[in-house]
Image (cartoon, rainbow, N blue to C red):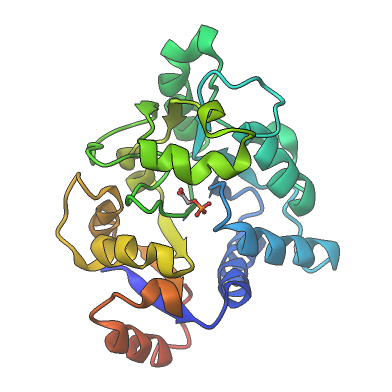
Amino acid sequence: MAEVVIVGSEAEAGEIVADSIQELVAQHPDAVLGLATGSTPLSVYRALAERVRSGRADLSAVRGFALDEYVGIAPGSPQSYRTVIETEVVGPLGLDPARVQVPNGTLETIRAAGADYERAIVAAGGIDVQILGIGTDGHIGFNEPGSSFASLTRVKTLTEQTRRDNARFFDSPDDVPVHCITQGLGTILRARHLVLLAFGAGKADAIAAAIEGPLSASNPASAIQLHPHATVVLDEAAAAALSDRDYYRYAWANKPEWQGL
Ligand code: PGA
């Protein structure tokens, strides 16, 4: 099962995950990170950026693959995940933009974009740490309910709920694209370490279903139950619907010193 870590704040979660990434990069300067967008991973990026600014970490050789992108959105528009990754991750973390890829949502080349992305991940030797958020409908990446656990990077249709959830980044809800290109659940499961973060009461049901519910394509995040090394970092509100909270706290309090995240 996943290791479930319940923390007091988003900032604390960010520090814990940043510690683990900093340690990985110290050993493997060109480690491959899977980069989620959205609000959830920002605490991790902030913590890493602070370490880079203060000279404690150097991420300039790190390679990155974003999880997903909207289809048909103008390249360079503020809502494109290419832009978000550049402004929130590449710049602040001092990554080399040439080493960071985002699925190509350009309409003209969309048919081949999924297979191209899979090839690029394989050529990089696979993803070492995949950072993940979770949607209120249980999606990870943009793998909406019903996504195959074997799916690879491909075009998906966003649910109305996801479009509503993401409307805050757009001028109008109608501007949220209907299609996206996302790493599949199969792609995500190939990463060597999954780190799923969730904060706030709005994520509590999705988290309980993912960690303690049945394995089901109807609940895409339940795929993490199949992964041999998955870490779930939650605040109290996001952990509130978990039945085994006390056990997770007990296991974390008794975590062996030698064992990293
Ligand atoms: P959020 O989105 O981090 O902005 O809450 C998560 C997701 O939809 O995967």
